[in-house]
Image (cartoon, rainbow over all chains, first blue to last red; front, side, top):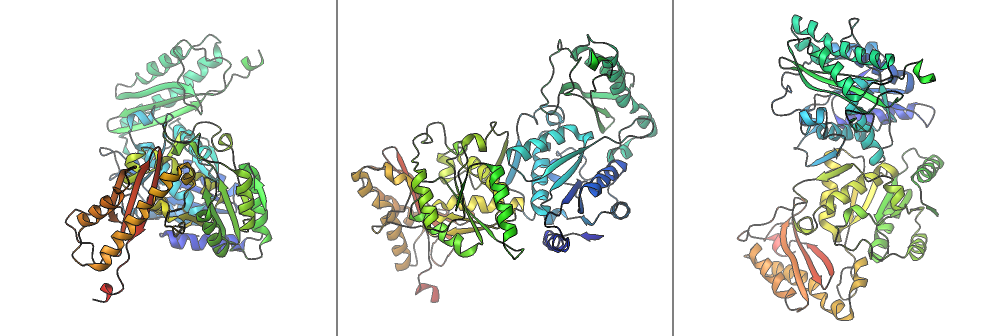
Length: 298
Length: 298
């Protein structure tokens, strides 16, 4: 495994690796991350390993996707451990550029997706998704992967990036990978390290709220979007520390919100998504609603 | 030569052609145009032919780079003649997508370059350059060229696209090609067909103004930006029909305007650019200022 820090060296190495593979159809798989890798990232690397000839893991805490009052400076970093994790997962190249390498001058060019980005995390974090789509465009142009692997914890990010890929005819397949959770249900996130012991315990209300919503959908056919929103808020508000940013139900990947009176039953295109703050730490979680086995046969 | 109208077929054909070339380093050259080809385009195809293994000419009148009151509907088109021109110039693939093929849904994704686009044509045509950079991004992603050829008549477009390529790390070399002129000096443009006989005659003030400015620079060392602007306006105003949109001197490719009192002498990074309307027809022209041979030895 090679650790590479410059764009020029990465391009050279990829060119050599592509040539060394017999088939002209060699598949490069990219796993773009901000590092501080956890088992969620590991599952992305594993999927990439299965579906690619050459796996590139990028680690870059991208300043332009952080707001001025967000946690760019304090975002957790552990390069040495990340490199070992990547090695253990069979990654071929770890790309760790500096901010100066990625932005030798402040970028004058922005890739932005409208509509999908004006809600949920986009509403709470103005400019965030422009930063994401711009840096992902850069990474795609640098690595030129055939496949790129993203975690569904950032479901809105997946929808936004897929829209960008479609609109701009990018020659890359976006592979969304399932959320990975702790045994007690908490969705893995690099930001979980910010949580105090008490906050960590209370943070379980997110996954519990999602589970209860799914169970309610499984149990009854008359459920409306308003009912779901009620279940989510009730569950989250059991934690006194929790401050809800949003608790929403919408179509996926269009992210069109459901009107309160809309029925949920029988639809398999719905996403329930949460963002909740514990102190300064903002956690997100979501679930794709499954049609109940029984009800789907009605 | 193949004429191809869908993205899928183009990708397939390019993949076959790339494989048929012995060297793995096959160079695809793209000449993006809006069609109604003239000798300016021919010079781009010629440059592409010399510098590429596979030449792709795209013909697409891109609706999103036209303003609501601009000439999208009336923009001149002659596909049959264009295809013959391309064939004569040794183009390998002519890509002529429909609007529906390029925009099956209205694009939610925009690639935009700031600063460089707020002046000159960008000031007169709000949104124009966003349309250009977005469609050029799409074409780059579809064709994946190693080189792309653009005419310097649209000098600002060249600067904007080069900035986009730099900022987004696009793996393509932008090759700017010199302006091609009629024997009397008029810069070739598909829009020249809009001109009446009288307008066509008066339109010569553009190239004359540029020539006089160059001559003035060659003749004297004390010339300021204000002097240049004066020369340009005096020359253009000799035509009663001419309505000046801009007549400017700036650095290239930064497009930073020169202050009036700034000296022009001894700089080789300057661009003089004009946009002038004759009736409804807006013509542009420009010249890169050359250091005078004599003065450059002083």
